[in-house]
Image 1 (spheres, rainbow, N blue to C red):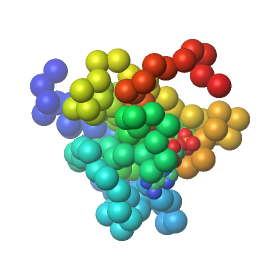
Image 2 (cartoon, rainbow, N blue to C red):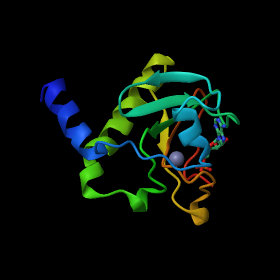
Image 3 (tube, protein in one colour):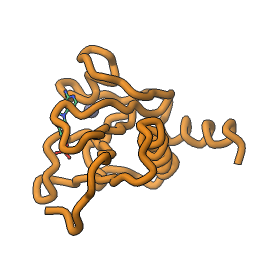
Length: 132
Ligand code: AMP
Ligand code: ZN
């Protein structure tokens, strides 16, 4: 599929208005109202360094659009969710990693602390399994 077609699908998924949530730290980073070490950004998502890294490489990939948790994503978000994973792989590659871990914590039981959907990209050390 051409990039143009993918971009059109993503635009449809994101809607005309990029919704933001007042007081959401990741919306503030996306809006450049809060500083972050940005590694990658495009029309749909932003990747930046985690402020409290749990591995030598620890980045977060977030959609520009505010989606609180994976449970709050909709079928129309499918292209956007795919984009987040592709960007995660790109960020890992840019960091020189061929092996890395991607994590999405959903709700408190899984350790989610920031309620704006994000994909963790972790690498640069041996990852244990299962995670704690
Ligand atoms: P989670 O616990 O899965 O919700 O992950 C939230 C992540 O966001 C944690 O790893 C935090 O260290 C990270 N985090 C929180 N605030 C910031 C910030 N201002 N800049 C970068 N990372 C942040
Ligand atoms: Zn947000």
